[in-house]
Image (tube, rainbow, N blue to C red; front, side, top):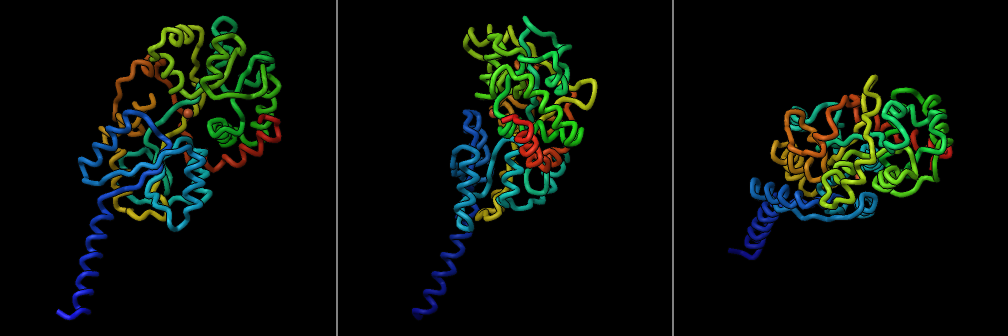
Length: 338
Ligand code: FE
């Protein structure tokens, strides 16, 4: 064998080894860190032989990291929460379009776009202090701007993705002018300047510092299911309302994922996204954070979610919400909802 032939053979061998190795791993950028996720990933590796390398961080940091890494980014899949963040990832051009018959048949059309797929849903509900208000006083998002609630409304920052998505949905339904008037009304009703996260609003409502606030359902479920008696007692003082039941339904949001544009393992990436839509993965994915599976016929057994009862969800496509997020940010700035 001549030296040239040998090195050609070696190169071919190396290339095929490289291709094989490429199929055997997946780099996942994730802001999720629930114990149930371990099982989720182990099952995928067992089923496919593909190892998952997880890079964990905060949502915004991970997006920034993918952007800075550019063409060299090792990221194959990015998992995050909220349509506002997925819209941001899209605006930064982080995702590649994914076509998958399986994903299209499993994930309802209003819960996906060309570039990302929702794997679980959460609702943004109204909570109120049961000693000072009644459910009828706060039956819709519109009621938060009612002058009768002056000095009673608490909120996290208007710039937070959860609020941006909610306001984006209001814009999609009611238009900008009406939504801006609403935002000014809510600001006029503030009990205090926006601060803290959803759990802080729940605590402030329970303590009577505020009469009413909004919160994502999983924060409520977490406290209802808490091992701590204090948390469960606190929740007895908090009423939960599914907003807008008489009309379009309650705003829902998602936890979702997409394939990164520069993915080095695109086949493994699509296989992973498809795996997340399987019955078993759907249960782990949703239960890990007290959410609902995106695949409609997958049932979970979560007493805290069951205790909140059934509700009518707003059927507005998540992609429509995402497209109004930038307008929502400008509107909330104008209204002084910071
Ligand atoms: Fe959250």
